[in-house]
Image 1 (cartoon, one colour):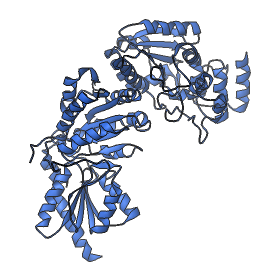
Image 2: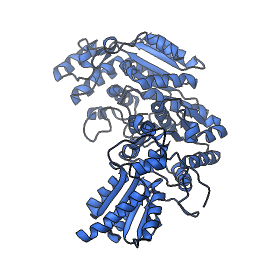
Image 3: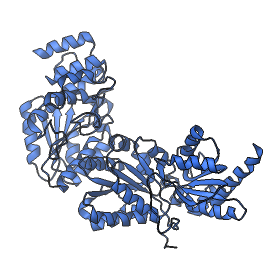
Image 4: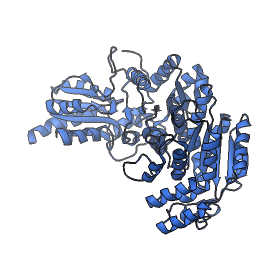
Length: 259
Length: 315
């Protein structure tokens, strides 16, 4: 369902980032429809869990989840990237209900999430903070500043999820800027690491449970995913990182996703 | 005259005072708390102080995250780092979302002194005033600094306040009340208006006193709020005096002089000379030596005023 929205949104706009939205679709679906304690009729509810989209280019995915979750009408998805729309090319918290952080400049989500998680601790509130990053995003130095700080401050109410689809704009992550040994890096920074298949709902839900029960340290879920997941000609194709499908491709993709 | 105090010391003391009254105030620093003076708050309220280590970009976004949950957050580091290093973090997570984060940066300008160019922030005001919705304040003395911090704590939205390293004389009267967005008249006058901020206010007053002896009657305005700037006071000065001299411890471009010039060009063209760093970086040295070498001394302000007085006859 979310994948169909992603194809429609990017296809209609003629621009956007389908690949990294499709790869994280199962994770975000699990969060919005199973994991998060939230209230779409009261997006500012003080005790809501916070979902922070650090990889802001996956805005089509976030909008699809927010619309299906009831934050705004599904029809509004037709306005993404159009003038006067509440649904900007990259998420903007000042205009879209349910968006926690304005993003699109990479590397900032965990830092922001630490702030929200510290506030929960200071106010003795039970909410949790979830931050979704791209793997290419982890090239940003600030990700590691934040990784160090989250462990230092013992933020066990913070969970990061890395959409490990192995592709960034210019190509394969390991060719552009080697990330491996990726899990070891997070462990060395003091995080509890859970590695999963990011397209298995049961593994995703299990990982969130593990993260929730882990005390004294932040958890990172390294979700191994396929960029463009669900659409054969987009899968593992760096071309669809930041390119929208043309009308013909939209038809093909929607047909595949109906199966 | 009260004892000399730096604006950063006034910040630290005020923050400590505010921390008692306001439990929603959280303070962040990036391993400079002994210099920015947030260490006073840290000692008094360790549960509400977070040292983020030498990672300013991370600190700014943590500040934003805390503010998004209703906290009033003060984030401090040196002005070079707050303004330059964190530009994108401030843009994305503080300015645009209008988060309630008060960036209070110490060590503004060349009066940092011997640490040299790397530590002398001469671009921060251009970088911070450029953001829509950002309030920018440069206090002239400790008294004003304390009141500016209190005002920021009581006013929602993002602030950038620039403090200085050296001890500065009190220039504001004891009964001074800082008014956000309003220039303070430090000295009335009818010939030329000197508009200054920060430590340059003291130099402007000194220059005006000297010029009074030559029969030149200078008005001195303290433009502590650089943004939103007091447009009326500037236009009034252009109408009522023969010209304007701006004085700032910053590059001429993008600071006080530029802001005044933009208003004058549109509303009331007037003679103007700006005192500031002219398209160059500075160096190590004592503050007074640096201010003199780089054209920021009270004598330079005097010269600028005379220039306006002389030019009058030529037009």
